Image (cartoon, rainbow, N blue to C red; front, side):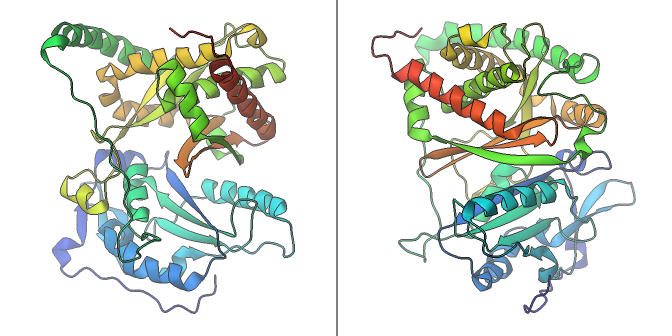
Length: 430
């Protein structure tokens, strides 16, 4: 990309500060068999001006963490470590060229194709592991789009979104940093919960033993069955992908949540389970008897909400603090005869049981082993909520899963679940 911006050079002040060790999590997300990146998509209501963006990168983004101006190198003992280097800012800024004069809907397709392409490309190891993409064309959702591509070695989604948010200011007062409301957990009397806590600990020990054994078997020996959502093709992680999005009203999700006594995650997981069943039926398959598993990534920080970068660095919570749960996808013989809410209740029951298990803290190395042996899967979903909406990004194996059919099934699943939960005033839930 041609750029008129001067080259930005960052040099470590002292040689001994130029190298920093990496965590085990960082090593296994950046290896010859696994390289994970995060795409952060920002949609702007006004056309994008590249000058403020470049200034923000230079003055706000790079100083946040030394990792943003460092590369990963191997030390004398073969372990990876961070090395601070000179950085040329224009090497990290990408401005794609699309045809002119198209409609917003047409630019939607170009944007999705572009995201799918950069998601598959590995970041060069010879320079700091991030890129900044500016899409200057209006889509149906925005006048311009900014995409950060950041390697997972830099940190997990919680760390990196905190870093990106720290580059923003409040619209009502630009002199103030961006803030979010804090959530407060309710307190309860300890004396009345002794027996419940004892039962929880005993069941937690059993759940941990069972879940970890089951996870090891599912990650090494026992495979999911081939189905409409799993091709089983060798090297699926290198196959082209397609990215689509579907948006739900967060207010309507909360209405369902209040009816079933669960969480937003319970509802959207149930929608996903139900949508997959509808999709398999559209593809003339039934799930009864098939082994299907979803991988749910979890943030392991003991936090209730947003934490700014300075607080993360002080509390040593920056980095990769995540694990995963393997959750079986419910099966059925005739999805049309199923109560849509049953999928939400199943999701609520399964995830709640999995959370009462220490297996979430034992599966870090298992995650590395699983991806090393099996690679990626044919379908993945990522969720983000903002301004009253929850958007699900659906990434599928191109040419195998019909993304638009799957999106329509997800929409149908949510509408049926909402109607079942909120459209019947006399219905009781247990």
